[in-house]
Image (cartoon, rainbow, N blue to C red; front, side, top):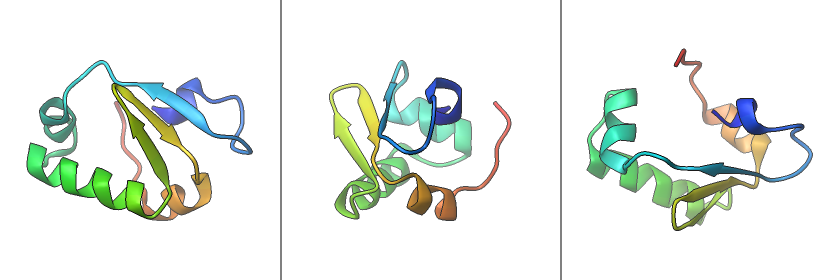
Length: 72
């Protein structure tokens, strides 16, 4: 999703969330609780920032190291 809205990885990118954590979990085959825990970890590690309906990717490199390719 981030790659679709980004014009480069050298700066943070904001993603407007138009779905709930439950729906995000359904997309990736996880529970809402698991999604919540993982988002919290990513936030604590400084990889993302969370603000009411927006995820900001702050550290592309670290996120890519954790990422598993998916087709949406």
